[in-house]
Length: 245
Image (cartoon, rainbow, N blue to C red):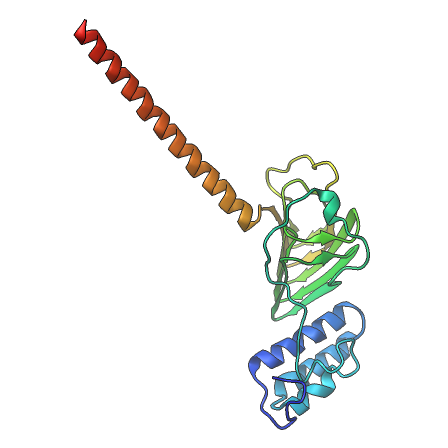
């Protein structure tokens, strides 16, 4: 779909989903109230053409994107080398929140976590992956409200995590096998409310690091095997010398 696409052309499911993402971001940022969001979302899923999609985001920061939606990309990119200092970038976050109402959202890959990230899930779910993220400040807060829904926060090793959320017939899960923070690592405070829902927090390394560790273990296994073979060869050689005496 292009910017000069005819308003009479039929919109695809992918077009509608990209516009829905713009509306969810606008709700999270306070640009739309819940009633406006629900009205536009209802109109969105009734829309059949580009011309019907365009008015739904015309007054939002991504003006003009409704006819050719182009949301911010949160796909994974190769992990970077360097210290934590290189990941405390200051400024504003690349996304300030996420909303999932009977749906889902995710923030992962190369993105910047703002000082405060607000997310809301109603009978839906969300994934917030910080493993490859930059941070707008040394201390950031992730505020989660999950109502009959769930969210998962993934943090890399070395980051300090503080969980302050309240669970009502639900719960906030602390990361297992927690560990001391690395020097210069950011502090992530996770708060909010889980009502008949849950917010999970876990530590994981990046896929690139998983591959590196797997290759390292493979190399160590090969080295141990070669060492055993070398020891057996030496013993056989010693027995031959003993028999020849």
